Amino acid sequence: MLDFFKGFKRRNTSVELVRLLAISFIIIGHCCVFSGFYPNAKDLWGHGVFYFHDLLSQVGNGLFVAVFSYYLFSDSAAKKPTWPRMLSLYIPSLLYGFAMFAVFVGTGHEVTEKIHQQTFFPFLYNNYWFVRAYILFLVVYPFFYRMLLFMTPRQHGIFMVIFFLSIMAIGRHGDKLWGFIGACEFLCIFTVIGFFKRIHPKKPHMWYLWIPLAILAIGAVFGYVMLTHYVEWWTKYQTWMNNCVSLLILPVVVVIFHAFLSLPETHVAPVNYVARCSFGVYLFNGNTCNIQYGMKHLIQYLGNDMNLGPMKAIVVAWALYMAIGLACEAVRMPLFEAVKLGVAKIYHHFVKEKPLQENHEAEETRSE
Image (cartoon, rainbow, N blue to C red; front, side):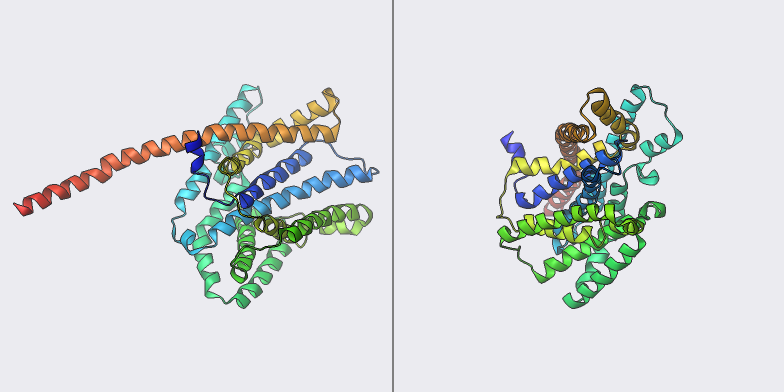
């Protein structure tokens, strides 16, 4: 078991913890939005807490993109082919889609045409918007990275501001354009993280200043939510704020990411392994069958039948989704690694060794 974890020791655990924080924010946001519970308009505290968690899911999306942007913004990463990473996204999406579809059918739900389409063609019919946007991002990422490197840091900074303002002005319309805007949002965050990585190649220090700053940034999000309860005309601009690339969320993402990046570097393999499982938690939780049917029923059951109340039910559901998702991914990942190793051995045996043997025989013939 210890040998298995050794392969996960290379990455900085301080950065990998951002993945766990991101998926926690995303799941709690999903639980709030799709719970079927809505706070009383007169309940200021309930209103603030509920919609604060909704915005946290956007912070979580941005943090996920910030982590892979940090690793991808390098020459070594840009030179590698992107198709293995695309497969590592798409194949688990299919697996979880089939598994959730089987549970959905087994529990007696009516299977609509949309469910069929999103299960068997998740990329085309947007079962997982994040995966579709990520794959589209990977298609253009190597060219985009080289374009940024052609710029001076000053030009990079100007382009970053223009790109950010353009994406923010578009707002939440990405799903209508087949994931194109979602990919542009990822490219925007990649541009921002890359800019800071260029002007400060070394990791930031003084974590004891960055961490309080990150807490203040989260507090700013909560303050925004509370303020919208009093200022009604702000609601018309919420589509420009409730987005991972917005004037409110993106600065929070950058500050939180750099706060964790500033922590002393450590390498704890089991923690890195659990952090890597976080993507599977999203696939388990974000499936259409679960979001549209399972999550609402679960939280309603916990809140009404178990008498936990809305907020306690949401917290319990969040804990259940995190635990079950991590457990499923902890089983899937070793199985996939074993299959990948088996395929590699077969390929090496039948494709690699045969030409080597033929070349060796040809050399012997020439020597005779």
